[in-house]
Each structure stands twice: as structure tokens, then as C-alpha cells.
Image (tube, rainbow, N blue to C red; front, side):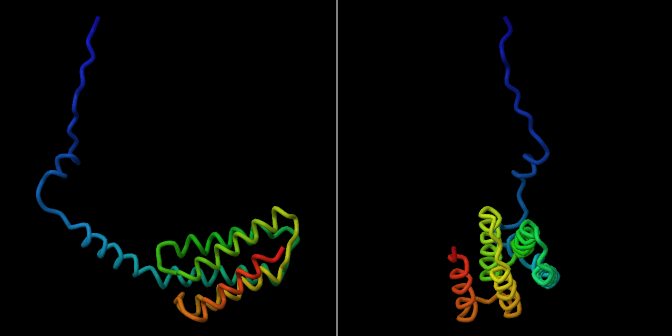
Length: 148
């Protein structure tokens, strides 16, 4: 019978990890944040374009738009995920939640979708800052979402 043997393979990465030098984690995080901030304006423009698409869908009110509305809300969440979009994220999440429930219940209410689109546009126009205005908008969206 043969005996099992264990071999430890040392990769070049494992060797590099034990060599002195490199960056501190806090410095790497700071540099990554600074690099990411260079894309903020572009991401916010893409979010605005997505809200424009949502407005167009609300204006057309096609019969089977549930999945499209959900996808647009998810796109806002995805685009803003790397930035502090606070109330915008919550409004987009609420849109996805309400669209999902409407699809599941087979009942569609365009005014609820339009209110979400308008709220997201106002929040984005206020640079996604948290404050009295965004709190009021989010409270209104919560009330819309609670409607049976």
C-alpha cells in the first residue's frame, strides 16, 4: 500500500505577501475611493437617463411593463451602488418592491410608479443628500407602498 504525501506549493503571490513594502489598507481604500469618485458624474448622468426611460414608460403605460419598470429600478440601484446615494437607493428599492408586488398581485397602478419616478428625480436633483426634503419624499413613498 502506498502512503499519502502532502506537498506545499509556494506561489509567487505567497512569496510577495511576505516581502516588505506595499500600501497600508487605509491608503489603498483612500486611493480607490478617489479613483471611483472620478466616475460619479458619469454614473449620475446614467441614473438620470434611466429615470428618463422610466418617465417614458410611465407616459406610454404599456400593458405589460412590470418587468421593465422593475429592471429600470434595479438599474438605478446598480449604477448608484458604488456611491453614497442614500435616499435615491431607498426610493429605487421601494420602486422595485412595489413593482414586484404589483406583478405578483396582478394589479398595476401607474400613479404609484410615477410618484416613485418623480421622487427619484427630485432626490437626484438634490445630489442625493439626506435632509428634510428627502425624508418627506421617502415618507410619501412608504405611504404609497403600504397601499393595498
